[in-house]
Image 1 (cartoon, one colour):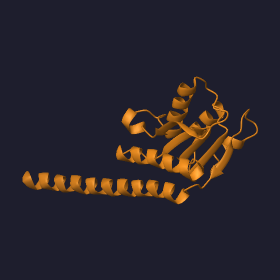
Image 2 (cartoon, helix red, strand yellow; image 1 turned 180 degrees about the horizontal axis):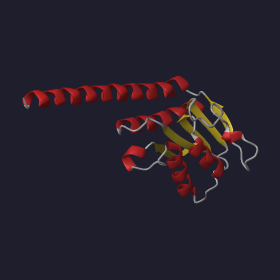
Image 3 (spheres, one colour; image 1 turned 45 degrees about the horizontal axis):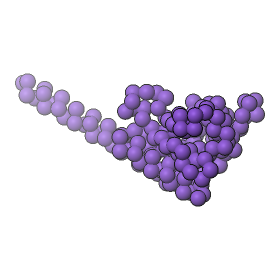
Length: 170
């Protein structure tokens, strides 16, 4: 199995998040050719700021293995990790990180900054980027486009209801 296979699995997790109206980001952790954990964003569902796909996958992998050290594991994630997730990756000693879409606003695996390979930390991860990047980016772009359209429609409906209420009160 290769990076494309595991990234497709991460994309399946992203689709699960999308079905829940969560930002569609998915992650899987591979060890020895086997997926040992999965995660997708659950921030809205769980009302939890730290329910990122990567953190959920790391937590599940640690629970499954009975250790906080993921030294031989590879994390596949559809969007470049944010600062919080990069910190968890460093702390859990993930050997390798493979991501799909770059994140110019918060990506900490080389786009905005590179926490994962900063030699001032006691651990660095190998980083591979752009694996199925177009597909990973498209699911996010489509999600946010749909969200903007939905908000625009809701705003127009509220405005129309407000006008109806004003006319009805005259």
